[in-house]
Length: 322
Image 1 (tube, rainbow, N blue to C red):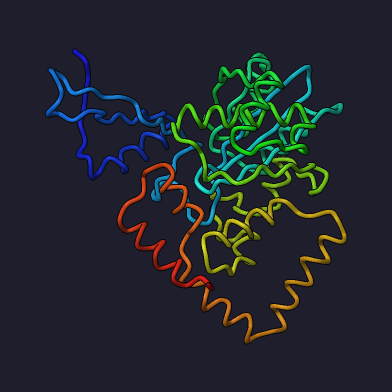
Image 2: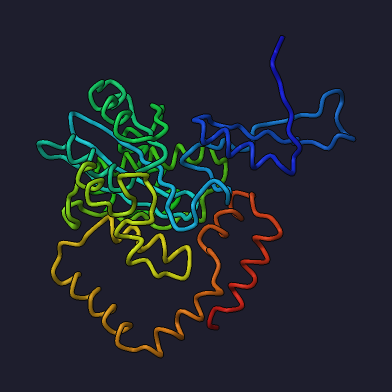
């Protein structure tokens, strides 16, 4: 009467990946007591909940592409925005408190192209915004309950991880969005999140604003015809040697700088490597043996690491300068 199925433990990752790609969340249950000491059924508990925005399995996330989870917090028509890649520990936050903020939010989401979007009650009640998000972005969406919608609770949450972050605490909307994001990660990942990097607070005006339509037509990271990287701007300029470099160049392409001084600084670095052939070739040779440190460290934190991952991390550490 109750449809059930079982899968071998050693192949569970493949089935988890399939379920996630079909829009499901997966609760991981494990035995929490020794069968020898159990009276009757061995006690089991949920130890982690895997969602499209928090999955870290190697076959579920592309090496050179971030898997972003976005948290959208609305209050009185103004918005806080926070985004993370739980597999690398990156966290970014900003806020939109001006007129026309809704269109800015949609453009910001298009920039990160998240696989999952969480939001508070006010966003959940905005039928227009939810409809646009559903139509334009192929992301898993859900409204979440959190005590971090209040400023004091949000500060307490982030103090626990980072201490007093004055830049973030000065922006109440961004603060609440980031705290909601961390609250959600704690509830689903059930770990202390010690691998998460410091929150990078930014202003959207630091980058060229491009809406979803413009991004699609410019074919920055994928083509309009088949959605593949091949044939896009990124495919032409990406000569990176590591997964980390691949993600960085992809983010640079999707977030064009507008500051002349920052553009000149980046161009100067590129020019130096372009002109110094020996330096460039030596650097490429060294980088080819570097594995994905960011995601390997995250796997250790989430306790999903295996022997192959640890050997890869060991080999990478040996290549690093002392």
